Length: 215
Image (cartoon, rainbow, N blue to C red; front, side):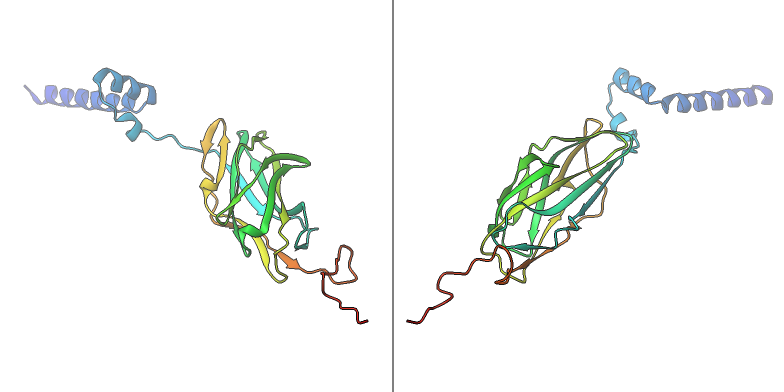
């Protein structure tokens, strides 16, 4: 075999190798080869790039400055979402109750405007909402709110706050698939101070036995 034949054979070999690599890089071709040859390395060797994105923010109603023990329908948290190329469905939310005992929250509801989406389960320091079903179209912004009934045993000076500890505490689907938010957790809510009404303020009720009338 002379030098000329060796060089031709070498270039032919290089072309075959390069063609095989190029064809094998195609996702459909890899899947076909995996099925024909009977191995299952495709799902490990090929990884789809997930460009989906959802913005999440937790805040509070700026008009609500404090909470009084025994108050009902207190707007404590606002959870805002922003979508991009896919629609969103919120199915569940879980909050850690900070600053007060969870037993001092009598009731919690999740609302979309005036519509109640879900009633909360308050236990072990958390309030959870399931089967929410809140939907938001692609390239949209929207929010839901949490309202609570404050227990009568809340004490003046306490500060109540709802936090989202982990991405798994926000159960959302994006584009029809379960999606894990990429925010930095925990997300801490804005606190509301617990205050006591003074005697001259509306809603004040004089405690029994507070005043003794001398005869």
